[in-house]
Amino acid sequence: MILANPIYDSVFKYLLEDNEVAKILISNILDIKIDSLQLEPTELNLPVGKRDFTVFRIDFKATITLENNEKHVVLIEIQKAKLDSDIMRFRKYLGTQYASDQNSYAEKPNKAIPIYTIYFLGKPLKYSKKSPIINVNRHYVDNFSKEILTEKEEFIECLTHNSIIIQIPLFKQYRRNKIEKLLAIFEASTRHEVEVEELEDEDFQKVTRRLIKANADEKIRQEMTIEDEILSELDNLDRKIADLEKSESEAKAREEEAKATLKKMIQRLQSKGFSLEEIALDLEKTVAEIKVIIGG
Image (cartoon, rainbow, N blue to C red):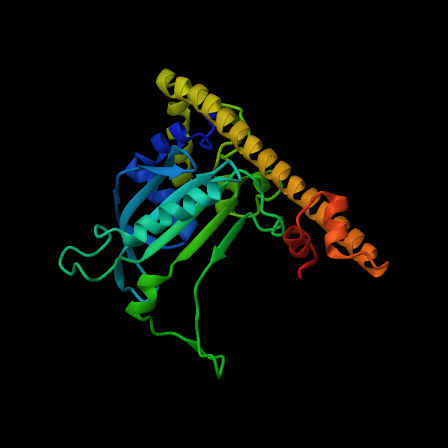
């Protein structure tokens, strides 16, 4: 099967705008029964340096059923990272979510709705290269006894959150269960099309059929090309910033080295009996400047 690559924002958005497909994908990732799913606004402009960037993310308000059959309303945030600088944009965005008055219950405006975050990474993490899907789950632990506390507290639930980290490049190697096989439809590349084997699961087939339709949509294909251009510009900007920081760091290191060398020279002249006035005259500096250099 030839699918549109959902690593692209335009394809990913099209995929999750189908409510049934979104429920299939998210419920399998979180391993939680989702009763209802409501798509929330999907973009936010954030200042980064001297420019504004549009952080692509998809938010859902969901009603879920836990293992004890309790039902809860939660926010589910889905974001994708292709560039190293995306991490800081995610932090800024997450901060706005915690601060938003909209993320509370209508009937209890002072009660915050718990948040789940799902991150799709286009680059693997440094140390966790054997774990394509990482569950970051909170546990309440008694500091003294180390006992795990099972009762959930509203205070804690509203100020912390669980996360799922999905490392897309690792699915080339790991396809050991249903969810890994499903997420292998994502490819961390600039290829607009991906070829995959047909999935046996009927629900998962609904996901792939949606991506087949996306691949046939000319508007989406054009948006993928535009996204390539934008990402190339952002990548170049990140490299320029990194090069500038490196140059500034190297210049500062050379300056510190020169100061250290000058300090040693002054100390040697002092050890040979030269006065600060004589040293200052020889180095074309003031006595005050010499004292600053030697820390006196």
